[in-house]
Length: 231
Image (cartoon, rainbow, N blue to C red; front, top):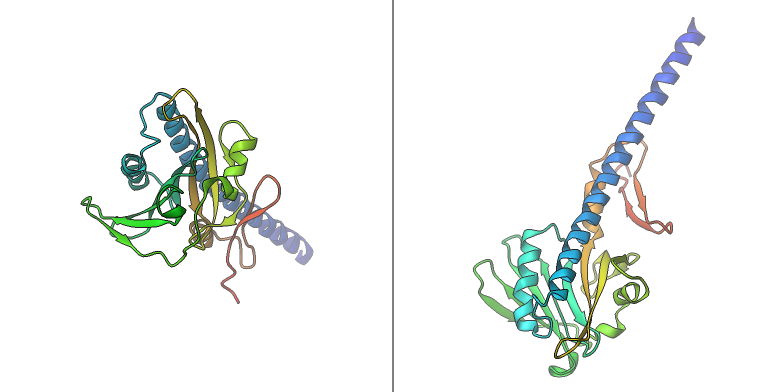
């Protein structure tokens, strides 16, 4: 009888662990799918609008507010931006403050030798320029996040890397080529997601007393890990 009870108890434990693993896998997959869906939706919309001539891609001052509004409305935790490969001009927005203010990043070789300029745009539309501690020129054509867009048609993803603001994240990109415009455009839209937000989500997933959740990319690159709080 003791042996039978042990077998039944062991089977129950294994069943419970299996259920927890299945639930954890489903939750992690759902979160990653939500991130991918958000990125695909934003990039497909921007690429379509650009192709239809509905976006002022050559005018960063007019493009910035359009990107800012999408950052406000969408589930973007990192940067949303556009870089023109023909003149290395770049503009991006990032929801950086809890009060709804957006940080906007500008850089172009024709303006101050591509040294970045950052402005904070409040929810009421007012803005102020803030000093940059990093005085390194920002050239779109040299940035690592551009490469997948040049190598793959449609939306492509970067492996995790450290952004300019020292945050670790992943980036989805899509290339837009519009040689018929004046001036012509050959650029890349990108949307970033900070991995700290994925890690925070993973912390809430329980897998028994000792289990942990890991998220890896298709090429086995680790992009998310559940912190062990039992240390």
